[in-house]
Image (tube, rainbow, N blue to C red; front, top):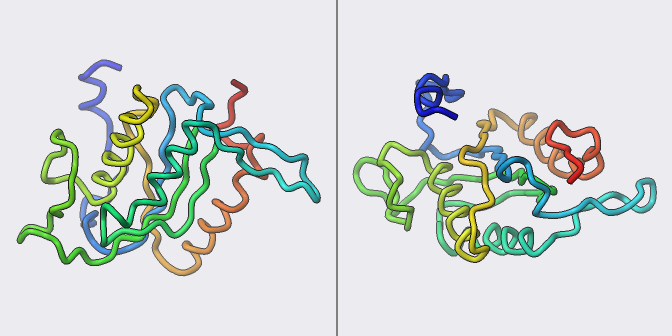
Length: 178
């Protein structure tokens, strides 16, 4: 993709929303070129419910998701699923008591993060960096998707989506046979 195309892209973010504010965010992180590196879906359905079987890459990603609170005391993962070529997770951002006057966290972030980036962006960037260091290569798509959870019903819908994602894998828009 040309650099000019990147500059012309419209941002899906709400212009008036403070993405550093406390709340719950539904995040999707995809592998580069949607390569199925993280898991494979096993199980036939009915009584043998389809579920992800993690690969080496998936186990490393799982380790860093589970350790999130060790790195960020104001973040926790409320639910997640590691699919073959993407991860869905619900990230709970609580008020960050370790902030500098402008709301920026003192937690470690990559050096290329600009001060305007959101807490979600910092989390995703740090997560990818730690995983890639252990992988010895970058497997992630450059961007990620996020959705602000607006209310209890929205939260419950996304929890259900995460839980049912392996069951719907073959109908998923991110499905590929690799």
